[in-house]
Image (tube, rainbow, N blue to C red; front, side, top):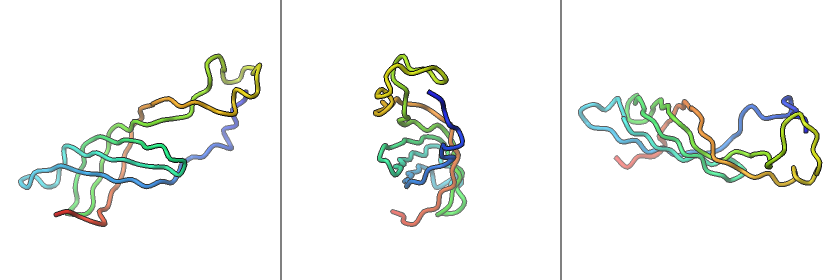
Length: 111
């Protein structure tokens, strides 16, 4: 099983939604920012971290993202021969964590 890095996607498109909690006295900081993102293939990724707000509509947020990623079956190791080629046809998923940074813009507001 050889990994072809040149054929991997560097980015994937999706849609996300963030909710931010902040106080009126300090409106430029949202200490709690929670987001849900969905990619084209369907699995949801959850985002949690603080945000810096720029007015009512724009913000920069960063923190930890938690979501599913494809995983090799047990016993299959990268750059090693595979005894059963069918074992790669239906990959399982596992939950992974990663850091994220994003720029958000509000198209709708409850305020």
